[in-house]
Each structure stands twice: as structure tokens, then as C-alpha cells.
Length: 164
Image (cartoon, rainbow, N blue to C red; front, side, top):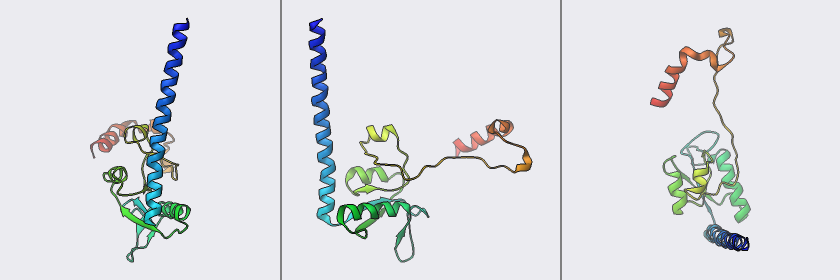
């Protein structure tokens, strides 16, 4: 019995050391981004390539939208000046490469938070600023009150959705 207790204690100690090392390494990497951003004097913020309401540049190059506001809030918190932001428009394909390579300091654009992005890519999601979903609209006169009433349409919708 003492043999198992000793093994369990050793395992717990190894996990604690590993956790501490991993946490310290991650903290050092994060603080490096913060220190580099403060040293540069501006936040490099990745945004979408023109999605009105989220991030969109007008003809004069002025950015607006909720994602842009997040970038400004970070600049205000980190540098004391909300205008100290340089925006980098990114496609969905480019966004993670730009973030993990250090091309941008933060990513503020439509991005679904998933376990694989936390674990595999090593991203740290700090919060949700927009929830979305899907739904159907039908004419009231159709009498449809549930998606189960779409039986004859379901297959064609499925084929269209997953083949386009």
C-alpha cells in the first residue's frame, strides 16, 4: 500500500512541476508580447478584411466597428492612448499564421473559440464579444412552426449547404 502511495505522490509532484514549468513558459511568452508592444508604442491588431459593423475602413482609411473598438480598448489599456493601433486586414486563412508568427499582437475578428484552437495552435482566447447562430424565416401563412416540417426540403438544403 505504501508503494502505491509513494508512486502516487511522485506522479502528483511530476504533474505539479510540469504545470509550473508550462505556466511559467506561457507567462514569459505572453509578457514578451506585452513588453514588445509597449516598446513599439502601438498595438498591431489583426482584423477582418472589411466586415461592416465589425471592422471596416472607409475611403479615408478610418477604421470602425466592434472589433476595431476592442483594438482601441487594448491600446488604451496598454499604452494609455486608444489611437496607437495599426490595423492589419486578414482573411480567415491568414489570421492564425499572422498571430502565431508575431506579425500581429492581437487578433480581433470573427473567430470561433474551439478546444483545438486553444490546444493545437496554443492560442489564448480572452473573452467573447459576439454570439451568433443560424435560424430559418418562413412566411407566417406557411403554417411552419418547426424545422421538422421541412422534410421534403431537408435533403436539398443539406446538399446545397455542404456542396457549396
